[in-house]
Structures are given as structure tokens and as C-alpha cells.
Image (cartoon, rainbow, N blue to C red; front, side, top):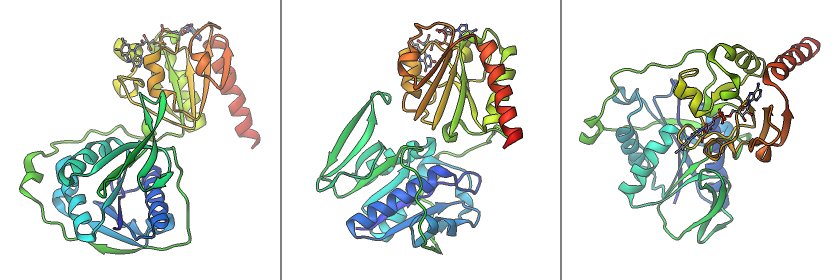
Amino acid sequence: MAVLVYAESWSGSFKKATFEAVSYAAQLADKIGTEVIALTIANNNNSTQLGKYGVSKVFTIANDSLTTFNNQAYANAIIAAAESTGADTIVISNTNNGKAVAPIIAAKRGAALITNVLDLPSSHSPFTVKRKTFSSKAFAQYSTEATQKVISITPNAIGAIETNKSAATESFDYTATESDNRLSSVSVDKAKGKITLTEAEIVVSGGRGLKGAENWNMIEELAELLGAATACSKPVADIGWRPHGEHVGQTGIAINPELYIAIGISGAIQHLAGVNASKNIVVINTDAEAPFFKAADYGIIGDAFEVVPKLIEALKTYKMNN
Ligand SMILES: Cc1cc2nc3c(=O)[nH]c(=O)nc-3n(C[C@H](O)[C@H](O)[C@H](O)COP(=O)(O)OP(=O)(O)OC[C@H]3O[C@@H](n4cnc5c(N)ncnc54)[C@H](O)[C@@H]3O)c2cc1C
């Protein structure tokens, strides 16, 4: 009956997406009058932070074999925690790791899987929730009668709600299964000092209109001033002006920041598929007929090489005076 939320850690720490998933699970449990339990794996002793987001109990797994993410092993550990707590609803953040474990858990438990959820259920019987669909171009209401459910929450969609609760932590004794070791991580090469694209509240993105890799200095400067991550269109990554990890769209990363600034990007449907769930879209383009303007909340018809330096100057002045 309980709700179990997998509170994902990155290098031992939580991010906003975790707090959002925990808040969601706490509100869900509250609505159905049950307990919410969080599970952390390889977290650096900051599990009590989760209390602030509405859980009263946190199970922690500190097992050497689970220090690095491994989809099969993490899914098995989450299933073990669900079985031990009697949880029939498992809430996970729809991050890259969440996307990897949620289907495994659902398949192994014979559970209904609803991904990319955007809201608390509009009904509990049958359980009905709103989710993103068709590459974020539409919303759908999904409904299930299943008791066992796995729900993955779209990051940046729901928000984290602070409460005045505090959480007690308890270590959860997880014994690795044979299938945990079928896959192991040999090495991890992380980008340093950058804001992760999928976590960023603001994203500054450049397209082919920027003419060359050498012109990305102004994109990076603007991003730094705004505390934003940088992204790009597919051709920009294909040509090699920017790393593939920055390519957003249908075949790239799907993001939904608070603010997406698209500079010199035409707004092809495949690009929009990955960014049109952004809360606010600002487009800077010389061509007033560029399709991106139709999806924009604010548009500047102008040359990026004139507009972006002016924006940078204005932001510097604002920062100096505030
Ligand atoms: C199966 C498939 C999957 C795809 N997946 C993706 C995907 O995931 N992501 C993606 O991005 N694309 C994807 N594409 C490619 C997509 O169709 C477009 O070709 C691509 O998005 C165009 O990139 P762009 O807007 O940077 O370049 P362009 O289409 O060349 O547009 C450049 C824009 O810059 C403007 N511009 C030019 N000079 C300036 C200036 N000085 N200042 C301001 N603006 C200027 C132009 O007016 C133009 O609108 C996919 C295509 C296919 C077929």
C-alpha cells in the first residue's frame, strides 16, 4: 500500500529532480492516506534532506557493488525495497537513470508503467494522470486499474514543495543478485564544471545561424551570465562545432527548462520536439518567417551577432547594479 520513491543521487548528492520526485510521492501518499518511504543508493549521508520534501523515513543502501549506477542492479535494489516495505506504487524521476530502471522494475513486477508524468493524479480509481506524449507536442491522460504502478516524473514540471517534516534514516540491507553483475561500469568520464543540460533551469542554444564554432564564445558568455547550460541544434553537433551531448531535439536530448533561448535556430519540427516543453521560449533569428517564432513566447528578429553582445552588455550592467 505504501509509496516508495527512488531518490536518485549524482556523485552522492541530490539534485532538484530528486526533490521533485520526493515531493510528488509525498503528496501522492498523502492523498491516498498511506506512508511514503524514500530509497537512496550510494548517497553521501545527506539523506535527511529528503524530510524537507515530505518523507518521514529514508532507506539507504550503501553497498560497494552499487557505488556506480548499473540499471539492472539498481532496479533489483529498488524492487527489493518495494517488496520489503509492501509498496505498490514506485515513483522515479524521469532522468536518464530513471528511464533506464523504470521499465525493468515495471516488467519484473508486472506493474503498469506511466512515464513522463506532469501532474498529480486527477483520479485515484482508476489512477489517472497527465503525461507528455508525441515528443512533448501533446498531453495525454493515462489511466490504469493496476495495483502495482511505476510512475516516472518529468523533471522541472512539478516543482519541489518544502514541508516542515524531518526524516529518519535506516540502512537497508540489500544483497546483490546474480543478475546484478551481468553489467559493470568500467570507467566514467564526466564533464566538469558545467551545468547539466537536463537539470538546467535556463538553456542558451545555438544553431547553424551562428556560422562557426569560433562564434560560440558569446553563447558561452551569455550562458555563464545567466547561470545556464548550453545546447545546440543537430547539424551544429554533426558538423562538430559543439559536442553531441549538447544536441537537443527528437534525436537528441529532450529538455524542459524554465527558459530556452534559441539563437540562429530555424525551429524545425525535429528540434522543437526536444524543447517545446520549455516554460518560456525566446527566439533570436534574422528571418521573421523562421518557424521557431510560432513556438516562441518572445521573439527578436535580428542578427545574433548584434543582439547577443547587446544582451551580454545589458546583463553585465544589470548585475553590476543589483
Ligand atoms: C530524422 C531527423 C531527426 C532530426 N533530429 C533533430 C534533432 O534532434 N535536433 C535538431 O536540432 N535537428 C534535428 N533534425 C534536423 C532538423 O530537421 C533541422 O535540419 C535542424 O534542426 C536545423 O538546424 P538549425 O536550425 O541550426 O539550422 P538551419 O535550418 O540552417 O537554420 C539556421 C537559422 O539561423 C538563422 N540565422 C542565420 N543567420 C543568423 C544570424 N546572423 N542571426 C540570427 N539568426 C540567423 C536562419 O534564419 C535560420 O532560421 C532532424 C532531422 C531529421 C530528418
